[in-house]
Length: 196
Image (tube, rainbow, N blue to C red; front, side, top):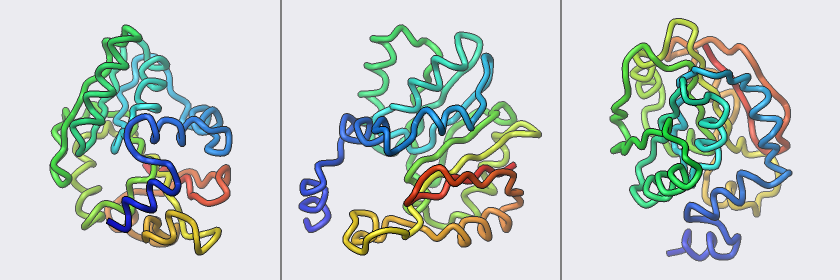
């Protein structure tokens, strides 16, 4: 109840709300996409796809020879993404419903797992990302963006505990057998880390 009131106060939530937030200049979507260095033919997972803002942009970049898997635990979000992909004639978007711990993806085919503002929601993250390794190609990457606790103590992310310290993420991903390859400082209140 309290979380719902705070969401209304900050006017976020729902697929369009997620997309609006993701596309804002302050969220630096163009810089993020440039840093990810996607190319035609790649297979990408948008883990916690929300409203699909990044799913659809990734689909345009990887082209018809590539594929983007929009993974979410909310069927309404996935239906929204599917509708938007059809409207844009993006046949390379695949909708993947996840129960949270189980993500049905093809093994050894994924070039990049991208996840924005989801890491703090995951439970048993070390084991979760260990299991994700089976989907990645040998040089596959995991790009994680999330709030890290910087900024106002009255921010949405801080009030609801929707953040994870960057050091915690690095330690957990190391324990899950990943190596940090990039630490971007693009975002003032979020980390942007890429692992291999």
